[in-house]
Image 1 (cartoon, rainbow, N blue to C red):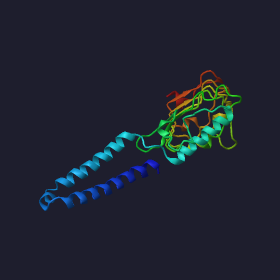
Image 2 (image 1 turned 90 degrees about the vertical axis):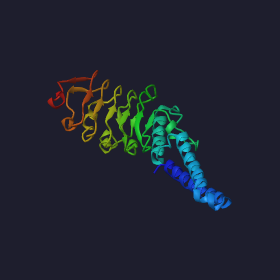
Image 3 (image 1 turned 120 degrees about the vertical axis):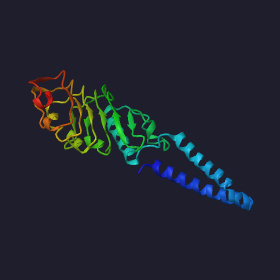
Image 4 (image 1 turned 90 degrees about the horizontal axis):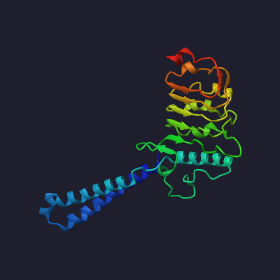
Length: 241
């Protein structure tokens, strides 16, 4: 569970105990008649509730899950080791008070604290080499809906850690892989990503007869972009409809 859950829970417990102590002290000093009216109790408890509400309002976002924060830092390390530059500087591992909610290029669900969007487009477009992607780095983001990897010179991936692993991301709806260096080997990787609605493979190195294995099995797919490649043929009838 997120640290924020335990913090908010602790605040509630502490506030309740403070309220009880204040009420006991207040009621002890007041007469029996005043206690029977319950005025003092109402004021104290009301103040405690107000304190809790102010606490929630001031924080707004209570931070991401610790395991997802660690996964983001691991992802940053992978990017930086390829680019040789300290990208994503707001993703800070040394500052213990660094709040994931303030990190660039990442969006969290305000209710669950889970990562739902990663905008990693054009991160290493001018790096010294292409990014050898490890798709398993994204698997901890179980609620991820939107992933943008456009313009990162990705042409390969760690063996057995390609995009076929994304079938485990059951909420992934948009995957942008435009302006990379993928060849036809990537086309077999999308089988099983049944939640996918939008897939962008434009500006890559796809060529020859058009064929994406399992494409018609992706029943939720509504949009696919293949422009500026060298593919031949037409979309299958399942997509034309």
